[in-house]
Image (cartoon, rainbow, N blue to C red; front, side, top):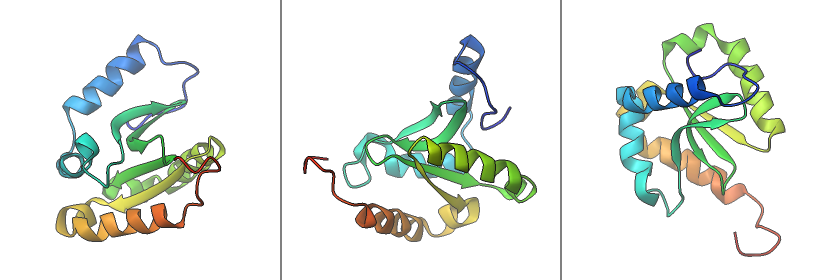
Length: 130
């Protein structure tokens, strides 16, 4: 179901789906992954095409509880579905930041600045360590 429709548990099909998505990243996802991989963005560990509950997030940083989504034109037709998905991820404690493919490809620094602003607004972890 594309970026992930509701499923109760990750089964073999779900695992294969995430593998297929990783192998067939869009040009936008590949460009973003070149920036994020290997703690390339401010030493934060991001995962690509990773499952969170019934969903598959384009990119996720579990430490920041942050999901980054790269949206192509089809998302204009799926706004209600995306809103429901984002609401479910929010209930799971995640913040979802969505970026148009064009923004990522033409001005990735502007996208990264938006992520930095989000990270800077987060309250410090209670233990002072995260």
